[in-house]
Image (cartoon, rainbow, N blue to C red; front, side, top):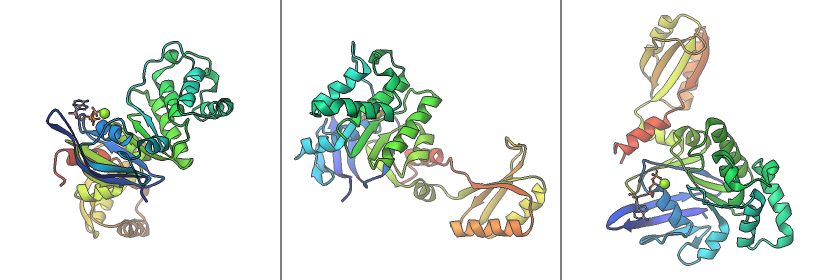
Length: 317
Ligand SMILES: Nc1ncnc2c1ncn2[C@@H]1O[C@H](COP(=O)(O)OP(=O)(O)OP(=O)(O)O)[C@@H](O)[C@H]1O
Ligand SMILES: [Mg+2]
């Protein structure tokens, strides 16, 4: 059974379809990233999943339970972090977590231990007596994560958990999400930061105009949506000879010598490649056999941006 299943789900606001016949599944233990332009329908999709909005059509299942028919069971299984942190005047970090523990009926004697564990997980124990409003955006997001874990949900739904964060806070949230995933939780999050999505996610869904235009692993999406794989080779010298050699190899449709050296002052070749992993391995073996002075050989992995641009321009079906 899937952790989350959307079956033909639609939502209309004032005659305009915000979510339009969405179908996708998220398996238990996945980190699933939802990306898409502003207004694509990501927040609406999440709010329906977490029982805050009713779909007009279709159904959503969480651990096999219908969101419409068993909303309280769904709420028990899900922790939801909205895209904006609410206003909590005059409340310390500890009181904030106490408040949510009470909302979720965590028995009183268990609360101090639970809150201590959660504060440690998000690395905030030293701020437990500080007012929530004095925390930076990054610390507030970490507190928000502690808050959604308070009833030990199996699924986390996070709407743009990294928005507005500086690079360090962003990386810390990324690490934290991995740690939470290692605890066995399923995570669905939306983001505009494609690097985070590419780094973290087991699978990615791309939304546009209320529809899920593509779903898959990054490599599945790349293979489907980009015309070829892109390989990068850095060399100590013999760039022209290597280029000529590569141009004659199977699966290589183009070889370009970059005009600039890379950060390590190496010469760089870029290859358009149409082959499987085994073909890449065979190509590297031939290069080494022929003693070309290679110091770096990799597939360009920042392709999510290209996939995103192609999908959201409507090139993909
Ligand atoms: N409560 C509402 N009333 C009317 N229209 C709404 C409401 N909520 C969302 N919409 C509209 O539905 C569409 C989808 O919005 P949604 O917030 O789901 O997009 P999003 O993908 O989360 O965008 P963003 O990346 O900007 O957060 C938009 O056109 C939005 O204006
Ligand atoms: Mg949104």
